[in-house]
Length: 409
Image 1 (cartoon, rainbow, N blue to C red):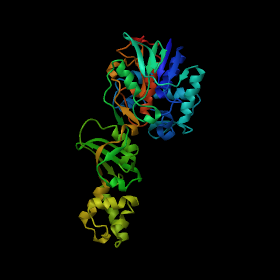
Image 2: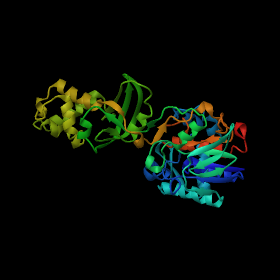
Image 3: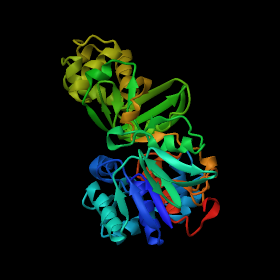
Image 4: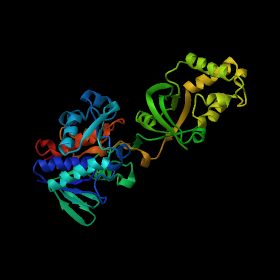
């Protein structure tokens, strides 16, 4: 059986290995000059391969498409993925939050391991851009790359999403899916920095905070809250906490972000701490006092929010003024204007409608011989290796579908 795989990213390469191991003649069509271009930069170049957890935890971290992915995770668990790469000679480690990385901390090691296995299995790699599916009747019989035709018994579309266009993810997979009559749900970035209405973020640009709690509210109702790290930027907020929060933004509404700068302290405890600072230096002006509690670059913006004259000395602060400062430190609030552009998102939300895909084989329910895997599907998860696990698991089913053919053979 001859199989063509559109896309040489995580899902495409993994599907190619599975199909080749099953005895198929496999060709990867990759538009970039090398495979795994996006994979090389994931996890800040370290590659968060998967999350070393059970299926129940996986599904809790997949807000979109979790039920559809149940069969995929049952067939290819995080532990299976770890065993696969360790079998290729990649030493792995599990860090905080069960996040799995190569011991080398080099994403390139994951890509090279896949590349070496593809060569061993004699998978053909052609660097060309697929422009059309060749569909005759209800069957996909190959693809077209401009004027060139590649015939195949089956085609696996694993062309990625629409984020990080410089890595080749420009939405080609969605175009091909529509050619086959598939529904593509609205696309938007997820795991993406957020823009805020407040201008003081720009004043604090470059300041990175650790061990703070970020809360996201929609129309005043809690939708996300977590302890971790974030970063102030010229447009708003970024960093791990903010990216995670963005994955919880669903539908229209008024979204607000709330930063607890002192999560280990209650309001009362924080007020006592401030009073101790005042007692130690009663004649010190407010900026000097707050530098004991905040990064220096945050002092002026926070004082501005409190509406207190900056030259006010500690011993002149009234109780209401102290309480106002403490409330600001416990709830530094920002109004979300929106997300950054699609190009800045880590993953794409939306994609090929899962109802039109067989969850046991990733086969199209509309066109025989056509399969989908990875980010092109309308499935996405939170940060922590969950999105790569979606790619590996769906690619596993698509690559092995000849053994369990279902609808698409």
